[in-house]
Image (cartoon, rainbow, N blue to C red; front, top):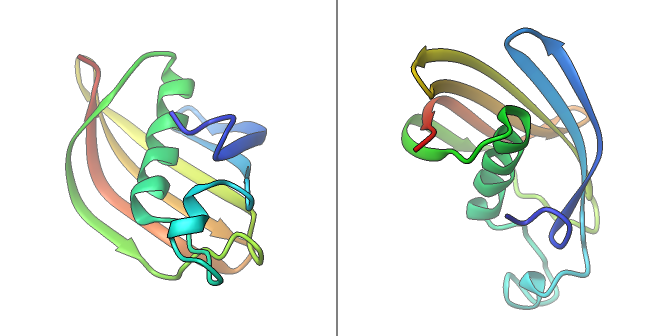
Length: 124
């Protein structure tokens, strides 16, 4: 979990019975940016995916594992010096016992950085 070190949650909101959002802040001084990339920091894609997973686990109050993703689009890079406050939107559908179909975005105002379409997470 990257929560507390790489990013913090500023607020959480239940939008409906099948969606929620979180406002987060990226720690622009985190050590990961010393290597990714010095002088031009960019949030790694794997960190964006982990943030979504963390927020799903917090929402459902249990551990989940990624089983499959139909489509992932990294539509823009996140430079934490420019965009350290982000919005994460997650919509979900319970498809089986302890399995969820997830769609999610990470954005800042009008810029969308990540789109996850039809990911399946399950609780072991």
